[in-house]
Image (cartoon, rainbow, N blue to C red):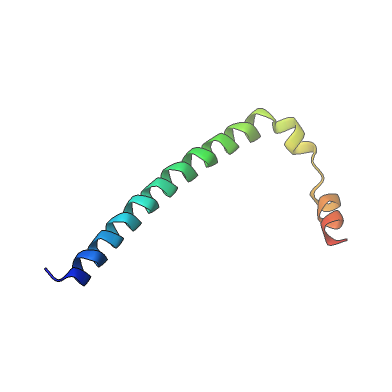
Length: 58
């Protein structure tokens, strides 16, 4: 097998490992965020998005 093919295959293998890691950590982060929103739903429901967006504009 030529060196360039082996290098390319190794790069794709590393890319696959990185993508799987990112997918798994993103899922964990997403789950934690949803759990936090569920726990703090009174705070979330009382949050005024319009005021926050106005503050971001300025």
